[in-house]
Image (cartoon, rainbow, N blue to C red; front, side, top):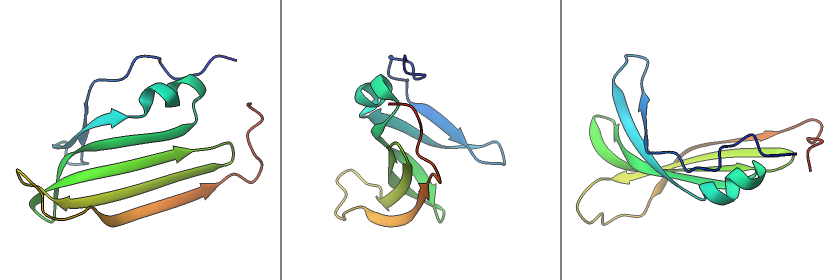
Length: 102
């Protein structure tokens, strides 16, 4: 069965808050492998605003047959950040019954 994901890596995307203001733009890594099967690890990196200050953001999405995880990490922005990414929030979802897709 072909993957439902496009084989072309998407251009950076802008995400809008409920107020309609674009507050983040992300680039992706891992998309090519993710697009082949619709599973794997997809990394999104970009800049956003956190608590009114510019931050670097790293979001890691992991999709397995019966597991989906979302992990968001941030650090202060700057020309050469001096801090490591810090955990911001994360979610784990487990399917009651694994997908029948291979």
